[in-house]
Image (cartoon, rainbow, N blue to C red; front, top):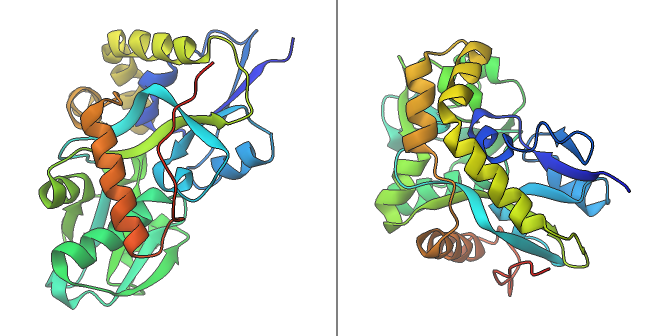
Length: 264
């Protein structure tokens, strides 16, 4: 029997979702990739299931969301940040967007327009080490890298907090997705069980990630327990729909996409 191929981001925030899967190497292949790379791998049938960026779901057809889990925030997220070098946000003319990101790139545009009435030029941030150079006024950085950048000298916008202040709802960065035609028995239970095991083991995960990233364990533990949320309930779905409405208004997603759930 072929192994189930699951694509996931390599960041700390995803580790509780896959903690219970890592030991099942006889049944599961975990494939790590940046958010921007995973959707194409699912489209090409290189993967069976992925942690899909929310915006990718709204740009496609033929996919369904596996219920029960997400990577979300309800306020401060700490790992999706816009670092602004100008003395005032209003002076931001050029924004470099993290090449690894899809959803947060659109979120950045929504926040800058809806909260600050800004429509700057957007370019791609290929090398995050260059945020200290002068070729852009602001830099979007996501994932573990965003947590390691020292904020001195920047105005820093935490985009989870900015979204929450804009709409009063959680922001959903990614959801488990599979193709509409997939017939994978026990998939939803597999992923829910893995999440529950991960959340029970969050102290151990924080210890592992603190050593890997050279961050304080207490910081990692707070991030995993307070900043990142893992449910996909009514409020998260409302937040997802709100994101779709804003993204549609700016032409960043397809019209007529509905939130549909995978049923075995």
